[in-house]
Length: 206
Image 1 (cartoon, rainbow, N blue to C red):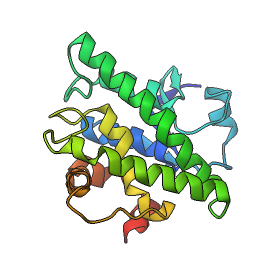
Image 2: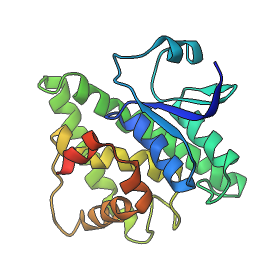
Image 3: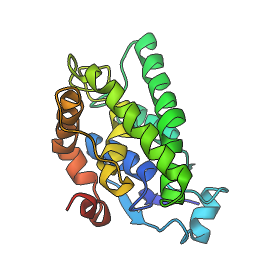
Image 4: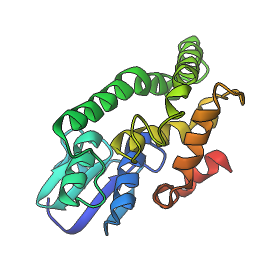
């Protein structure tokens, strides 16, 4: 599969596609974004991605289809602004944070989305909410997740936090959680985040 311009096949409601759209917006990359519903994967996408998953990025002869791989590729191909730290130790730490976000939280969201009215979903909601409350204080001293600069870790967290109302999760508005709420405001106010939103995602928060 070859395309003359960079193309992102993106699910307009999926957090994994959303995180890639944020990176593209941060970098100011000219890209064709084709909205595809998860059950509407085409032969063209299957040619590029044997798993038929979204997001799938096609850049001339190159096809990439795992969101973390796509994000790192974009960060290296378009180095400004950098979204991973320069130094190897800090870069590895950021990658580890992304791994933990995926392992600890993305699975919970997937459970809620798959069967929102189930007991498993209710347990997942409770666990995710409590986990967010427990980490709120880390945003007291730094503007972003364990960093003064916006990174790929924040690109992963922003779509999750935007979707809290859709997931049926409401955070308390108290002193303990205020640093997290302020962090969310900073994320959502970024021009790149605003640009990354699809019409369906905008509806989540009116």
